[in-house]
Image (tube, rainbow over all chains, first blue to last red):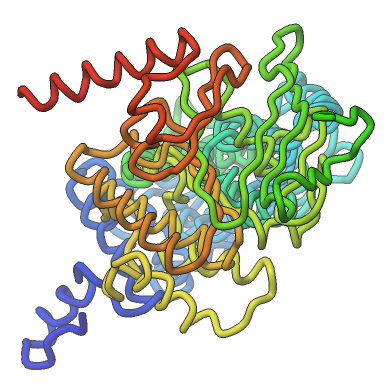
Amino acid sequence: MTTSPTSAPARGLRAYLTAENPASRRQAQLGQFYRQWRALRANPLALIGLVIVVALLAVAALAPWIAPHDPLAQNLGQRLLPPSAAHWMGTDALGRDIFSRILHGTRITLAIVLLVVISVGPIGLLIGTLSGYFGGVVDTVLMRLTDIFLAFPRLVLALAFVAVLGPGIENAVIAIACTAWPPYARVARAETMVIRNADYIAAVRLQGASHLRVVLRHVVPMCVPSVIVRTTLDMAGIILTAAGLGFLGLGAQPPSPEWGAMIASGREYIFDQWWVATFPGLAICLVALGFNLLGDGLRDVLDAR
Amino acid sequence: MLRTGSEKAAMPDNGPAPMIGVEGLNVRFGSAHVLKDVSFRVAAGESYGLVGESGSGKSTVLRVLSGLNPSWSGRVGIAGAALRHRPPKSFFRQVQMVFQDPFGSLHPRMTIDAILAEPLAIHGIGDADRRIERALADVGLDGGFRFRYPHQLSGGQRQRVAIARALILEPSVLLLDEPTSALDVSIQAEVLNLLQDLKSRRDLTMLLVSHNLAVVGHMCGRVGVMNRGVIVEEADIAELRETGGRNPYTRELVAASRRVSLGAGAA
């Protein structure tokens, strides 16, 4: 049952993770992670997605150290310079280095995405599972509420929220979160309606578990994988909505290097100075692609039982 | 004076109060009348079998007795108390159930350890570590299985886990819903013998539902034969073997199961 103490450390770790008979809760869990990681590793596209996402995280963490210029330093003598050795992606209308701005912009993008996900996942999951599990009146009320939010185009509703709350990143996050949760609730509800009739749910009910316990401890864990997958696939949409708000001037406010706002500012020069709008656009594209590929891979990994 | 009409479920002629007493149980799903005046009684420590083809209502009886089906009418007493439509938590310490499909009755994302710890946590029973180990040992699984996930177990092993889960609360009544029909033939006997063994060690009262007369014959002393929501005949297994039953449906069922076992013997 225990891993043999004589084996070399690397082999020992693998043996520990792949043990047939794990000796503790933690070992069983780590073993499960390890199996999923191996499944993910076997999928090259998902791995590319993972690399992009990890790179995004690294860039966001290291931006001040790897950016060659100050992203906010204006230099009107060097405005709209094409890409060169000094400015890899050229400079914008105020002479700011676009490469540095994109690197710093990862922080804003990541912050928006994380805040949205943290708020949207649990809300959607809770509403969806409660609705699916209890059915009846609870289901009707919650689902009609969801329908109302679903009926609005996302960007338009976000615009309305921002118009009421005022422009800024925090409000953009709130606006996006308010418009992003309904699909999660739908997904969670659909899964719950299947799960609630499963024997293992009947079995916990027979052990005397309360409804709350059944939902939180037994139904929710079954819905989490699909919500995680849905989230990673949705990241692209969230980034685009954030960029859209930025583009319309309702997201991050001017000096901050938000990608959508950068594209908006490059709009006027798009024919003569293509690089001003192109590079932030490529960055959005790349990150959206990364999250999408990762999400696709995760779906395969987490669904396999 | 065989029946005194207004006399309540006390039934003095049968000695002590039965562990399971069902009288005039009716269940309707919409317009379908699934159970029609079903009555039977199971004494403490007895094994009683319900046989019948699928759709005969035998599993519905079990769902009512386990508290999973709240819409029924009639008088049902179980483990010394009248069954309520929404049973209290303490009820589930007395009555537990083993499901038909061991692939569906264990939570796919929980380790065996977590699955067995859950009933203990729900009822606030301490000493979980020791109890889980003993419950696994009781069903013939060594400790190495404890931290595995259900998908790492075979069908027979899973059903053993399901039995361990049902017994970890030390119930007095165990309801078995076709406990072996999803298993390989070679595993079936193993699980049935385990159940026999556990029953004799723990003084359990068992109610077994099956479409397989051989399984019921192996486990139970008495059977009720169900057809279209009615118990058409109640008999001792030995008597049934000898006479083939009185009711035409029973005779058909017995003959069919003889043919099957003959066929299996010839193969």
